[in-house]
Length: 185
Image 1 (cartoon, helix red, strand yellow):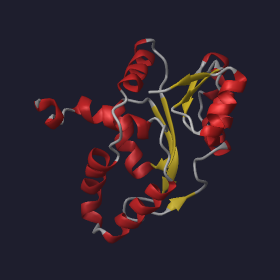
Image 2: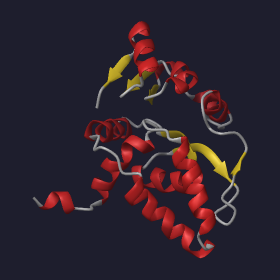
Image 3: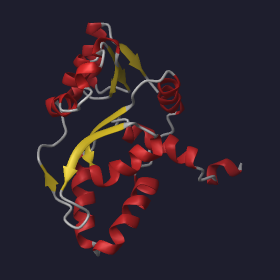
Image 4: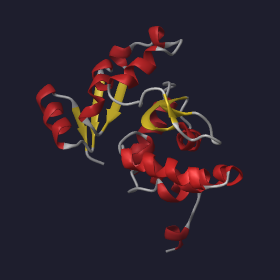
C-alpha cells in the first residue's frame, strides 16, 4: 500500500484539482495566505508558495475531474482556469494542471503581496474573460463551464454547456431548474 505515500506529480494534480478548478473557493484562504507571505522574508516566499500548492491546496481526490480536464485537452479545447484566488499561488496550480490560461485575483508582487484591482469573483470573471484577445473568437454556446458555486452564475451562463460540479445548495437548485448537468464527484 505504498500508493498512499506516493507523491508523484499526478497524485499532486489529483489532490489539487478541486481547488484549482474553482470547485472550492475560499476567501479566508486567500487572506490567510497573503498575511503569511507578509511575515516571510521575500527570499523565502517562492519556496513557501510552491509548498503551499503541494501541501495546503490538497483536497479530496477527484479522479473524474482530472479525467474531464484531460478529455478536454485531448479534444483540443482551450483550458481556462478562472479563480478568485490570487496569482501568487494560482500560477503554480495552472502549471501543475496544464491549463492554457489563468484568470484570477491579481497581487502587486511577491515582494508586495497585496491585492490590486477587483477580486476575480462573480461578474468580474466574465469581465476578465472579455478582456482576452481571443474572447470574440470563442464559440461560447459550445463551451463548457464548471463551478460549485452560484457566485459563478455569470460565467456559467456565458457557457452553453454549464456543469454544476459538487454544487452548493443554491447552484444545485438552479441547475435542476435549468436542466443543467450536475456532476457529483
